[in-house]
Amino acid sequence: MKHRNSSPRLTPILASKIKGLWAHSPLNQAQIAARLGELNQGRVSEVITGQKFPDVPPADLPAIRHYM
Image (cartoon, rainbow, N blue to C red; front, side):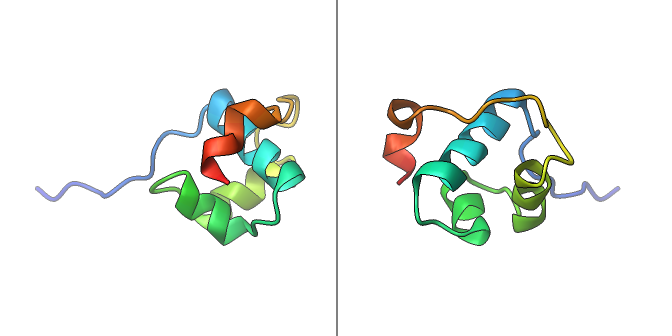
């Protein structure tokens, strides 16, 4: 039986990092996905537009600095 290749599980911590990078860096959605690992641009978009984790605040600069 074949196993699906899957992205990392989208968690509140990861959503916070996505929002922080979107707010504090010049990176686009595809670049944010690449910096955070095997995440795709669609998941990043869902977080940024509030479809997923709308109540999670963006990570502050020290928490995301090494992704920039």
